[in-house]
Length: 227
Image 1 (cartoon, rainbow, N blue to C red):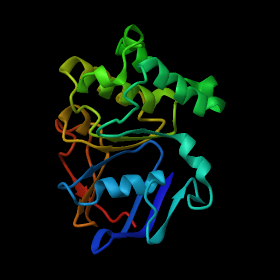
Image 2 (tube, one colour):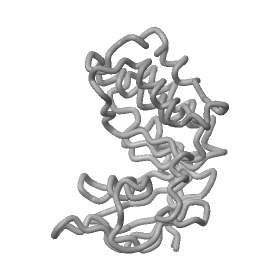
Image 3 (tube, one colour):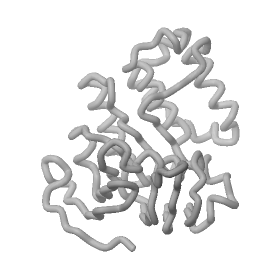
């Protein structure tokens, strides 16, 4: 599904990614781990086309994303902190995204909108929302267009226990049919990962298959060479 080949990205003197290669297949839940500043976000943004690597190639379904930007319609992205126009309501944001993605309206997945009871808050302006409600909006948007790939950056941050449970149940339901790339420290979600990629100083320092039957999702780890 997604193949990253030898990408390097430099911001001035900082080498954020250094000859990174990874592969994420359909039906895999891939966990990215590493300290702050290790390169996780730059890798995610490179896959999304938000950051252009200095060298290397990224393929989505065997097509070079540098020459075919349409792939992004098949990705649902939930950032760690969602940023939306302050004066827009939740309803406005949802409708705006539906207008932008108009050709996908026949595949809407509104499960999270209903589960999070967001319809009762459609007239609330984004500037008035709590961090948890903002996360609910971001999650609903990530899943809304039933994408083939979900990229979730700390998706349960600011969420209460009940809402985390809803999120984890949905991920468990859809993960067999999608590629999921997650950055999280939450045991609610880590248990679903069947691949772990460890990043440090812009380089891949560990690749592991994980036994998702383990209590924390990272037990019985077997190292393997992905490339």
